[in-house]
Amino acid sequence: MKLAVVFPGAAYSEGRHAIARFIQAVERIGFDHLDFQENPGAVGKARTQPSLDVLATLGFAAGITSTLILSYQVV
Image (cartoon, rainbow, N blue to C red; front, side):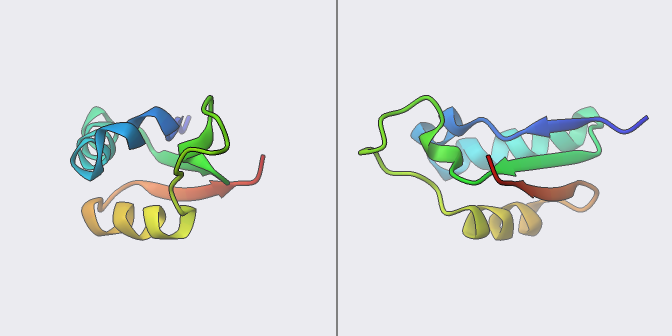
């Protein structure tokens, strides 16, 4: 069985170092997939606040992981 984690938009408020720590922890724990939603930074926040660009975030994640399968969800 393969397990996935959905990237939490709340990590954005802590900056890129928190995002990197989260991604590396997901990989270290042994999950197989990391899914990003269309607008991960806006989940649970007002639409007026900044949000992450999914493609840029996927590129960032690809640069710091070697085993995770990265995917994109349109919600």
